[in-house]
Length: 330
Image 1 (cartoon, rainbow, N blue to C red):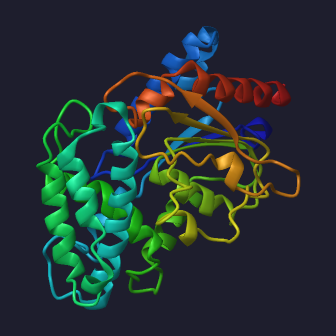
Image 2: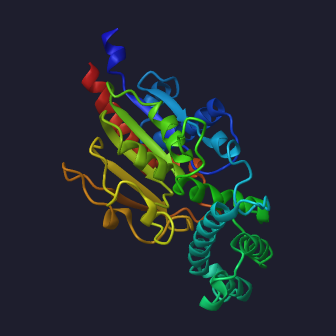
Image 3: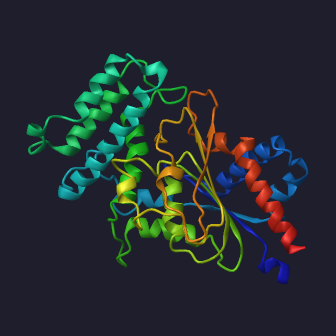
């Protein structure tokens, strides 16, 4: 049918985390977005969203790729990884340092001596760098962070293993290593999952969270189809010491295919650097650059994807764009 060829696409791109069931995640993300849509005044369009009448939705899942290939990854005590393990561990240490700097700036952690001690230990003096075993240092620091009194993410404390899970995946993606039998690196295989959800002959809305914003940005740089709206929530793209200098292509810019980009950050989201995307990313040839939106949730763990999607500020632009695309089909 002719209308099927121009039916919009709604593609969700997840962030870090362990294995998950894509269809279950898709349903949960759409339900969260539907909640936000209702609050934003789009109650009559919710069925069209959740039943895929207004757009074909998909969940670009790549989490399983982190559990194959290299396996444990640097810093998990595997040992014997040589230089590649050291490089991965150093990236993870750098990301941990920036995350703790963000935490230390929050009012509830000011004066936390345990946190201050760990931050000082993360960046030892220059004389120690030449002989420091980076992987072992990372393991010590993760254990030290997990033991800091009063330090938690959300309603519970995180163990060393959970912290490593949060921090190692961005480094593994950005290291551009871990080739498969065909020579495709981990980051290439991850981007292929995102691009596999997109049909260049149809308009798309891409909604990405956390590490997924990095993956989506780089994927869309390779994409030629129309992206009516790119939404990023909880994005670490401008993390100075780790993510920002390793992005491709350089300089980082709005992909040519993107017609609008809305970026949302919660004021208490420690994963999101203070440097705004709008101030860092160059516009594309159409002059499109990220439009920043700051949210306030007053929750203990504001980085969760569905917390963002349930906000009317996030759901509103998505529903508005869907309505415009649906009208264009009529």
